[in-house]
Length: 583
Image (cartoon, rainbow, N blue to C red):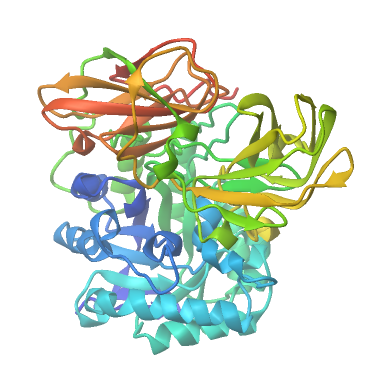
């Protein structure tokens, strides 16, 4: 059985020296019918291992529920990895960062007032215990101790950037062991956080993207013996809305990989293949200003968002071949997977969002707006409604907008408040006493890094009009988990949130990229599959459409435009448009 051992001079597998050559590949960011293709390309690169996080929030969408089906069928992913002869580094959290919604922590934890995440708070540890009790037993046959592909399991994730409670890490280690993990554990931290984030008796690894020698020296200072490993060798970066597209030169990244391997270190390339934040799953950062991450998680990785090898893939393959046996089979790196021929699709049907009552949850009355988590909701929107007390000039002031609020009076849009711009107040004229105030609030992604991870969504704090607090609120969830039953009619000019629908024919399904030039902000679906968010502010200008979501014959595109569009068409393209790269 291929069991990984941690020796003073490095890793050993089957009692032979072993170097981990791994690449990051998150199964939950890739359509499950494409897992096998991406894993094969990992092997052909020269890797012997793949790494994946596990998103607690998707596997356990509500307390007491647990899913391992469809795109969350982790056992199937592990089977496919084993079939390619690949080992697996498993990173189950409970916190994963990953530029993922809430760092993978389920939103329902935030329904608990005062809960301390990533701590020894008994409420948090009890929830983690229940999560691991559901996740780990089905994965027991996949541990290398019984012949499976999982050779090591991560304990937490970059904890040193968040806290320094070794007792918390010890509690997590105890839970992993109690639920059957008997392969080596490891922690990972950036060089300056290694002392805070480690646990005695658990292998420390380091994360960096450059300054290889300094990173490895920091690891050796904190861990005088044992394997040298970079668990996240950053070869690109993620993008945020409103910024330039981030890239890294292939030759520069490959040269650093060469230095890393020449030092005898093991590596996990972050990312081999980034994939996509489908639906509402992107995270956000907040270091004084809230910055939501875009839908694409291309990451300027070795395989692009559609899984095609990039020049960086070829450069890395050449480096790896200098330090390890190269696969006999040469990958067809120059060949892109089939793409749909470019086409224009007319969206010739419309439906006003506020008229689709069946998409909204039950209205919950209260004397204040309720947070999304208090409504038992993770993703999407909340519609808040109240009556305005008097006619005339009005100044609406909201304690905290989490994250973007569109404000309507008697159904007419009067303005937008954005958390990103630190906006709290809006002036308008109320047409009559008792006019209906409606505030549609979008969760643009929970913060995934740092102290801001306790990120409740909705309208938080007092809401006043002309200094007087408004009461008598209704809060209605709008999760948009399904789109069935929308009452579409003929396309007419619309201002305000509305669905738009059109269809197109396909002879043979293939990858495509959906462009929404002339549209403002919203979400798109193909055949009911949630592609993700679009926003005219960029940088991302197309949404990836995986071939498996299409079918031969008629296909349907649905767009929820939150504002207005200057056109009635969208385009299917054969290449992505990630936006203008930074200088």
